[in-house]
Length: 309
Picture 1 (cartoon, rainbow, N blue to C red):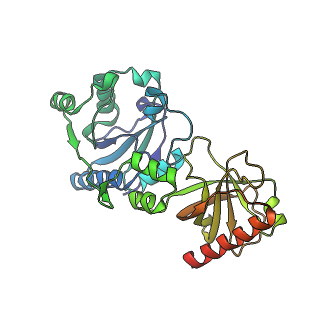
Picture 2: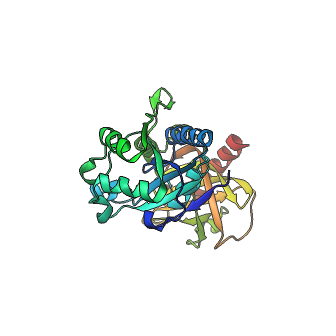
Picture 3: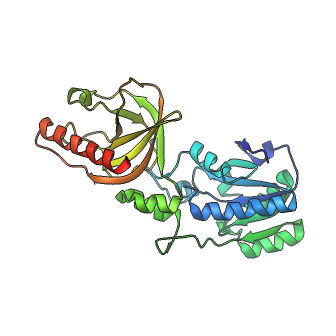
């Protein structure tokens, strides 16, 4: 079944109206719980010969409703859309969450879904949308009887290490640099990507030139420290020692993500680099001088080489 990525500003922009099963939610991280719900929906849609779609919101409703600030998102919007598409859905719809959507009554929003998508089922792990979150399961059952659709509440029971998986759990694990937990909850290696930008080039002077990533300023970063990771340049993969933090031995000011790619020697400014994190090696700390820092980096690189060989 051909997948098509749609990114529209309003549901009114959709012109292809046909029977659709729709999953509704923020889906930040697209963790294994999200994946389980979406794959169940996709399988049912294919069995019934209808289209499957996801409608996700951006910005995240918590940004507007709770005033959430700073680094928050597990993925960029582009990554989230791509990960949703990988579940097999036919359409991925990015819908803005703004003051207009916030004040829209649940009944009006459901009418839009039925009008523009011909929605026959609405899927989710929970339902609480619309003005004052009036769009709950009871409401959807009443509206479904009137408009000809069925709500499908699929409570995710996906577990990792004996506990339920959630986006909040992933955020917490990222905040402490626990990639056994992060990657277990996501069902894949967590990755970030960005353009390689010029740094202060100090790494070159001590024999470890690094690639500095220009990252989205709302992307949640791992805890400061050094990590074993893989760096992807196009289709080519390299083992990498990645530092996240303020580099206290050097300047201690700006937080940065920089990667030393093992067995690599080429200028890649302006190219896109994706880093997939495997595990944390150590926390970030201040060294007495560059010689001590250089010795520690050499030890870090040896650890990465051994663990990712």
